Length: 305
Ligand SMILES: [Zn+2]
Image 1 (cartoon, helix red, strand yellow):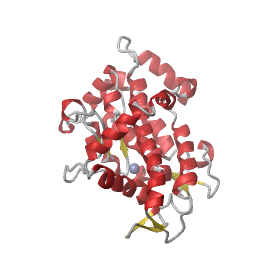
Image 2 (cartoon, protein in one colour):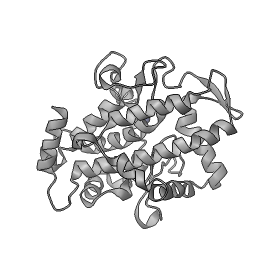
Image 3 (cartoon, protein in one colour):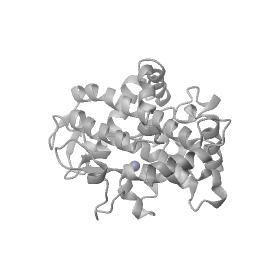
Image 4 (cartoon, protein in one colour):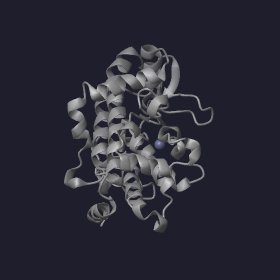
């Protein structure tokens, strides 16, 4: 996942995905729009302090880190997705958030709660038992994953990973179409392969067409810091309504699929970015003048105990 940079270098202050091996600006499947630019001062300072120097305060440049450490941190691979019962098109934390061995909480929603909870110890970082840099990178990545509809998919096809399809003439799997192909085609066709133009367009929607909805996206019931179960429920619904719909093994997906699904992809990217920012703002203190810690400890106590 790629995050864009902020400030004068980007012009948009938006987030995009960068290929970490080449540094090339390339969109992978998931990316979060505009998160870093939406941070309040406390959150922006904390993110800057937690990012390693070589990231040059660009959260987006490290958002694919969680995918790269899957091999080193084997335990983390179950944290990127949720398997839900086939064809039910619903998600429930208690029923579905577990890994292959049935261990509870080990899914992308549980991971978001876990890393949110770890980051709440930032105010006492010197005594924190956690690696908060890793917690920030995991949280940012998983916020993208949970908004990709097929990261909350049916168990039997592993979120579309075992459904072979053609994207136009190219062989791929359905999961990859949603991680990657739709975004890439959009970038090539509408924006002349210019990533920044595409991100700019999504950004304009956030401040334009979607303006009235953005506050709703940011809201969490009971003043929770983050609401990953809501995001997961939205994703499995979108998976049924759009991703899986009309697709069978061997389907050839082209213009009609692409053009009808692209708005869903753009919406989920925008929501992921807005919600990551809202979550980080809430974690690190939404009022710049009040140290966030007392309030946050209280919140975490209520939420997770
Ligand atoms: Zn992932």
